[in-house]
Image (cartoon, rainbow over all chains, first blue to last red; front, side, top):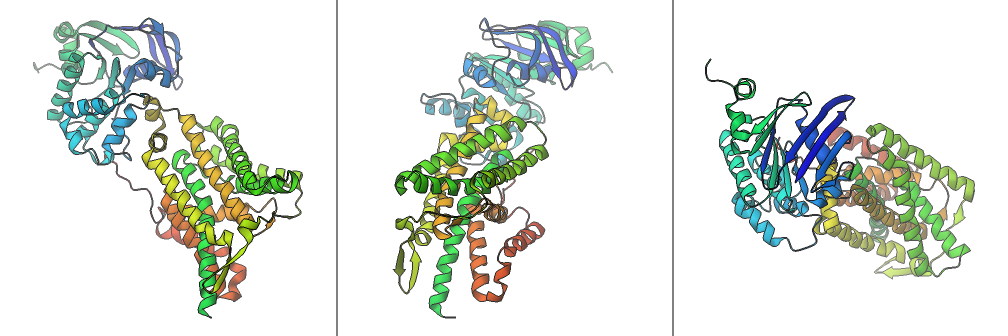
Amino acid sequence: MLKINNLHVNYGGISAVKGIDIHVPEKSIVTLIGANGAGKSTTLRAIAGLVKASAGEILFQDEDILGNDTIDIVAKGITLVPEGRKVFANLTVLENLKIGAYLRNDRIEEDINKVYELFPRLKERAWQFAGTLSGGEQQMLAVGRALMAKPKLIMMDEPSLGLAPLVVNNIFEIIEEINKQGTTILLIEQNANKALKIADYGYVLETGNITFQGKGMELLQDKKIIDAYLGTSKR
Amino acid sequence: MTSQLFMQQLANGISLGSLYALLAIGYTMVYGILRLINFAHGDIFMMAAYFMTFSIVTFKLPWYIAIIVVIIATVALGVLLEKVAYRPLRDAPRMSIMISAIGASFLFSNLATYLFTGVPRGFPDIKVLTTTVKVGSISLSVATLITPFITLVLLYLVLFITNKTKIGMAMRAVSRDFETAKLMGININRVISTTFIIGSALAAIGAILWGSRYPSIMPLMGVMPGLKCFIAAVLGGIGNTTGAVIGGFILGMSEIMLITFLPSLTGYRDAIAFIILIVVLLVKPTGLLGEKVTDKV
């Protein structure tokens, strides 16, 4: 569904992504793990058209979308759940969901109800300003908002960041659920352990290069990855 | 003082206040989205007054067509201003766009001086607006009488657009976060243009009502009302539309009441706005209805 070939991105004068290849097959969960500053966010931002790639190609359903406007990319069926949730604090929960469907002209009530089924908490708080929600609720809203666009591919940037452990488990269950309902997922995580457990395939990014890749379960058992990203219980 | 004079001045105060409110909405909306004080807004107002003069005196249009033409021309000017002076600086530091706004303001007033000369011109006498009517014991021009109602209707309309329509929802989203708004598929440029369309249309209506009240127009006529309405917006809580209208009312009313009760201080009528500004900035910088911060991190 999404094929990235030899992507280079310069960000603030620094070469943040140095020629990576990523393949995200339809209906899969693919994860990108790595330390801070490895270029994970930059990769997603380049796919979403928020930053300009300096070289390479980004094929979405065999069409090169590199250099397209963000609006066109969203219209083609790619949405990004940005790092730090970025819900519109000055809009109500319901309005946040509606604005996720901004480009759609069909009826959206049914999809709002689907999001409410997935996150019953949001229904209770539909008339509250999003800024009054807790971090976990805001993350649910950010995911729900992205779903409202009826995307083919959802990209999530650190959805578990700063959330309580119980909420993190909940978020990962939801990610799997969304995937089961047919949406392809490209996930960035620092919580490599959890991300690899639900992922079909994983890539490890280090300072702009892909250093390892493989099936989620294989990477989980790879000694180098355990040492670098998963931590060991031996000590 | 007779109660009749007081009522007369009260009506004048309300009317002047609602005129200020019309302009203040423009300041507050642009600030809400771009975090920019559009210093050229007063000059857009001035240009609208000239457009009205030319439509009626030079092109001899009937007043009702002239009003439409003037609103359209002013809106076009406002949108052009944003495209040329502000859009290219969207990613520049805030100070650059502010300086560009000041530059645009000077450009407009000097261009108007060059094109129309500095000699004051008479504003066309629109009989429908300048006829005097008696309300109880006081006599008012139609313009004075209807200005508050026009302002309230337009305020309602602006609030309806921002709170109940899709483009209004997009405006609120853009005012919060450009990048995330883009991720929703919102066309930022279109949203910003809409803001300038609304602000300029209100400035045009304000200019027509202003001209009917003070029928002498000149290139620098926008400077003082512009500054005062900016102050009105700050007083009400910049970024808040209802606040801007309340601020406008307070400012207009204090000005007229100063003249009424302390006629010896009439020369200070412009100063009162700035005194209010200083007090607001010292006591409550967010203004009366300043943006609530409902943010959890």
